[in-house]
Length: 127
Image (cartoon, rainbow, N blue to C red; front, side, top):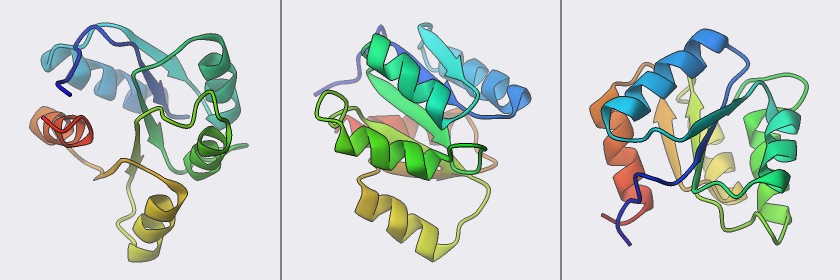
């Protein structure tokens, strides 16, 4: 399955600057349809209203973390198949393992560039 550059992407982060950075990186690699949410619960609401081709979520957010969002998404049969990339400043092994067990498709450690983001997205879609 090749990457569809027209698919809508949801970027979830409580830090506006990080959303802007990820949005710009996505634009550099050819994605224009990008929505944003400030935390997991806002993201969940948006995901229940619109079908996203990919979710890129920060781990550390309040009140609902990216990890909690991931578990909610995987538990919801309508959302469970949505590709999910977790972004975090922490490369703790136990976090990576927990995210993998919860069903994350890929994992990016900050800071990262457009090439890293592209290769992670390509890996998720098997390109």
